Amino acid sequence: MIKELTGWHVLAIFVTGFAIIIGVNLTMAFQAVSTFPGLETRNSYMVSQLFDEERDAQVALGWDVRLETGGDQLTLYIDDEIGPVVPTIKAATLGRATHVGDDMIPVFRHDGTRFVATIPPLAPGNWNLRLAAVAPDGTDFRQRVVLRVRP
Image (cartoon, rainbow, N blue to C red; front, top):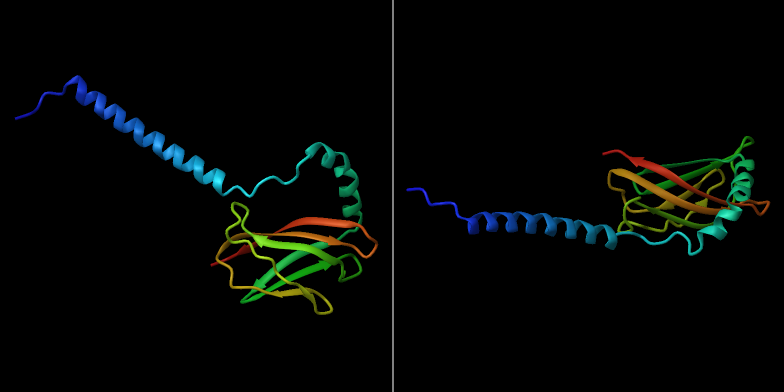
């Protein structure tokens, strides 16, 4: 025997369906906001006024920056057209682009041709090194160096 589909049953189906959709949307919105690392700068207008000048000075250095990993070693190469460059590293943060949960601060030491740091083994995927350094001539250098860790 089949029960009759009443208006109350249809209302219950619609309310339940929309409650599920709204619940999932609220969960996703909360996750997005709670994992956002925050502002890059408090006053973007002031930063934008110096952007072109700082970028041109940084490009004029002619540095080639690359990153490699193997086991528990993170290797940072900074070269110009002559060879290795030894800037002062002000800050370096290795992490994921999407959240700060895996962020770590590698302690680099220069071995004569490159910078090396001991880190825990990295999970497969995309990693970013947010690097801030000062060239020997005093030029500020900032770059995001992408590292792809293969499984």
